[in-house]
Image 1: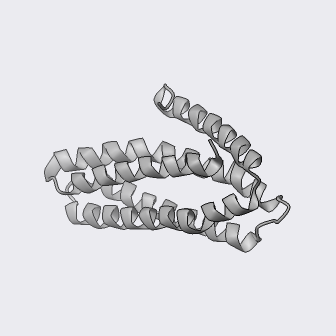
Image 2: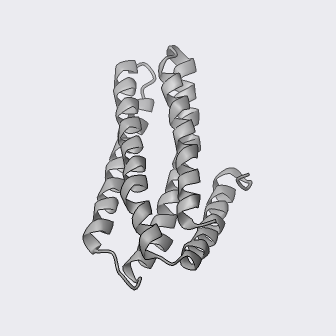
Image 3: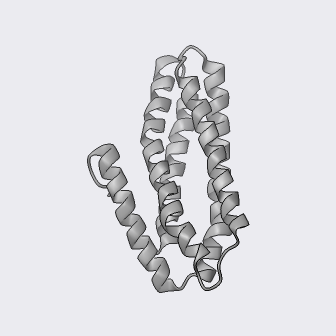
Length: 163
């Protein structure tokens, strides 16, 4: 499995969780609040592991490849990650006040939109760049290393390995 195949699979998992979050928004009271909280607690460790794979493995490989990617490109994705983190913070704050339904709706909708756009941006620009620049064997080595790193993070967060 290549690094982009791994990251795309993770994106699909994130999208399933985002759909569950949207469904939770349609529910009133504690049921909706609990569903959002559950989805977010599931998603956050996976997002962190995904970002670590990009920062620890993918970005250094792109920087040191035969045709190195400009620092501006990698800085752009770093800024994107900061934006996602900002919206995570807003969403977590909104969950601290279960009675603040409107704030939670706005924070959740904003987070979902920002994360979906980020995932699409990676798929439209970063992944094709990786597939063009890095040789297939390097993509596969990165994929295996990323899979191992993700499994370790999953074990730490959930006490098991992803299926």
